[in-house]
Length: 193
Image (cartoon, rainbow, N blue to C red; front, side):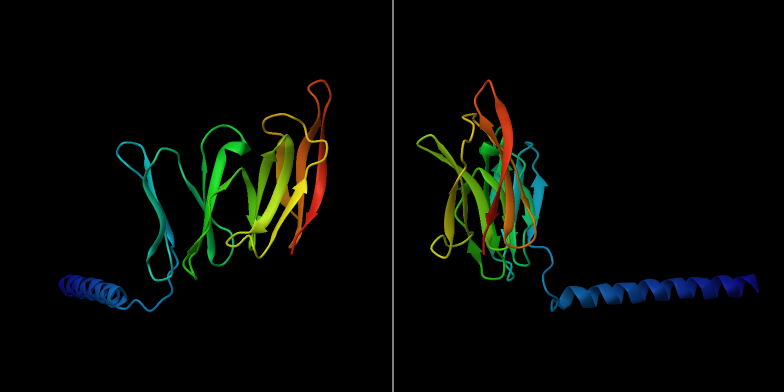
């Protein structure tokens, strides 16, 4: 009786492995499901990083095979992914690009990026001794771009403390004001479409 039980269990085991293998073969040959992974990051033997973002058809939108700094890739909306790299210390030393995987678009490169929400990127600017916050459409500044001057902003190299979003269309920027002897933190509310 044990012999028959052993043969029966072995036969069940073989049939279950065969069924799993058949399922795997079917799923590999049929690729009708939507793509769920639009990016990859890996570490190379020389400790550099390789990364790429592809569109919905698998075409490479943006890539680098020897980045000295670790990239951070984040999905910021249904179809848009950001690639940010910190090149030094402080917010002012980062850059970002954005890839629209549905429409195969790549944005310009933005410096001093503070964040993004929906179709808008927020980045700091410093021109002629004036600190400002720029809000613009990620892929086309002709659609929307607005610059907000940060009043009484400190002359420190990196005076922006943070940016937070409070629902759609509202952001709060925090920054340092004052001089070396008297520094304070202030906030401003920014409304955008």
